[in-house]
Every structure is written in structure tokens, then in C-alpha cells.
Length: 69
Image (cartoon, rainbow, N blue to C red; front, side):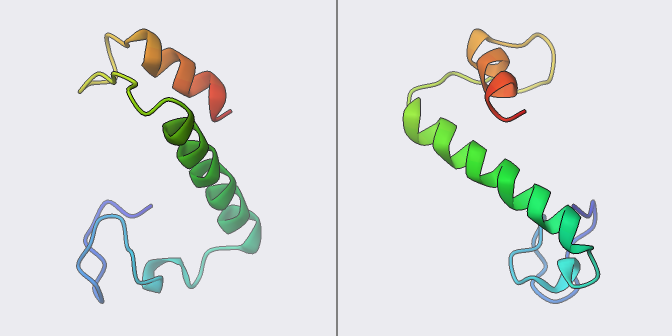
């Protein structure tokens, strides 16, 4: 994902699709897989407690990282 605002929708990450138009299908497919895993985790564990930073990680952070790999 881009670190800059999308020039079309001005969102980070882009929600209109513009920033992804040149991505290879393989990369897009992997992004879809990861996002589907994120949705499944959040639906399965709606009360998960996540840290604000990458360190230290909560147990839910650790479980999340195992789940989406």
C-alpha cells in the first residue's frame, strides 16, 4: 500500500482502486487473502485487545499475526 494519499480519493490506503491499477494480479490476490483473514479474525474475536505500537505486543496481537500468515 502506498504511504501517500491516493490522488483520486485522498485516502490512506486507497479505497477507490486507483492506486492498485498497476499492481500485478499476484500481489492483488495476496492482498485480498490477507484482508479476508483480517476480517475473519476480527469477526471471530470481536473483543481482541490490540496494542497501539508494534512492540510490546498483546497476546491478541500475537494470535492475529499467526492467524493471517
